[in-house]
Structure formats: C-alpha cells, structure tokens
Length: 161
Image: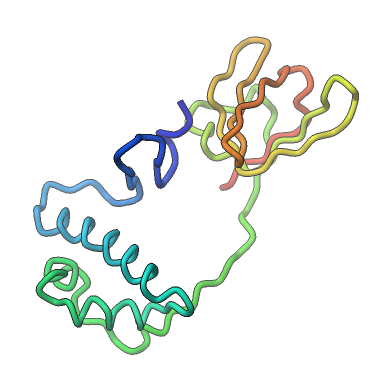
C-alpha cells in the first residue's frame, strides 16, 4: 500500500497524515509539530502572493499565544536563519538491477525505464512499488495511477541515494 510511505498521506477521507517528523513522547514537541503544520497551512492560505521564511516567522510571532510551543522549540532565530533560500538540487542517483531492489527501496524509486508490449520505452519518475511478485510489479506513479509491469521488461531502475 504505497500511500503509507509518502510524506503527506491524503488518502483518508477526513484526515491528512504528516510523516516527516521525528517521533517523540515530549508533549511540547508534539504540539509544536501540529502547530508547525497548521501555521504553514494558514500562512500560505492567507498570503498566497508571496511567502517567505521571514514572513512565516513574523506570522507565528504575532500569534505567539497560539504557537507558543512552536516558538519555544524554534528557540532564538537570527536574521540569517530567516533569510534561508530554498535551492532545488538534482538528486544523486544509483542505477540498480531489479534483483538488487530491496523492500526499503520501494518508496525511493526516482526513475524506472520500461519497455511495453508494443516495444515502446516508457519512463516513470517519482514512483512507489506497491507490490513486487515473481512476474509482475505494481507501480504507483505520480498521477496516483497504478501500473502493472512485467518484470522481464523493466530495463533500468534508479533510486535516490
């Protein structure tokens, strides 16, 4: 079931699961995690033209009663901390053979190259292996669609390292 291995699981009808925080039994940290998600949603919802780390921090600071645990966990931030720029880097990739693919790598597939029944080459990126059998692989692709692929026709697999 691939949706359990994503950072934000939106498959449940009434909830969204965030799966990118370190586990904790500390109630302050747990509240801060929840406040972080809520503050990001609200800040980006009401400031849709331009958002920044500095703007988000100003937003939560103005609502310090509501976000007190989050502010406590963040501690003292400097101007340099708030001037962070996000840079998209190309991932480091490792080419694998299907026989070398382990269960832990199922959610880490960056690109899979496949030859379909017509002999055409297809590439799937950012995909998750739902199931791997002796003859077929079920692959959830970025659109949410599941593809059934013959393992004999899988030509290349690249994972992020």
